[in-house]
Length: 145
Ligand code: RB5
Image (cartoon, rainbow, N blue to C red; front, top):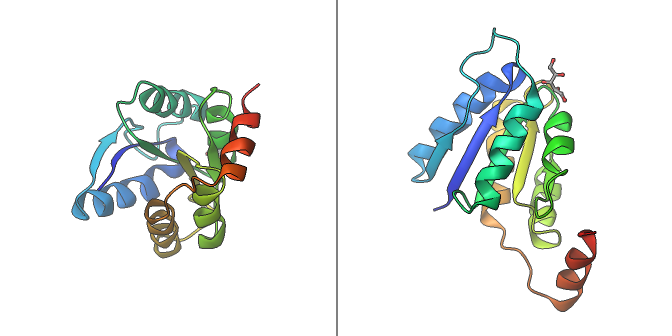
């Protein structure tokens, strides 16, 4: 089971709350970094940066971020060296983003995917190990500037 930091803005609050409960029930160690409700407008970069910081300090191994589309969260999280965030709305991309790209943050859009598909995506992503093949290690190393 994984040590996971999870967060959302108001646009992703409901899906974040559902996923947090499912992840805890599945035995994961989950830290919820906010936001606290779906009605108080807030700024997604604040939560993306909080989850990225948790991963870079090794407080959590992996992160999950939810906003309306997942896009803003991924853009903000990917500004951090060492963070590889992916927006997923299918399980194939989720699996390959782990295997090839060793993504450490999964971003989801509450307005894009239903909760059933989102949970499948989360499970596909968590279950897939990062490949240690030389070509993938070489390509990942070239991501960092
Ligand atoms: C908030 O309205 C919305 O812009 C945000 O949740 C997210 O979709 C941004 O990428």
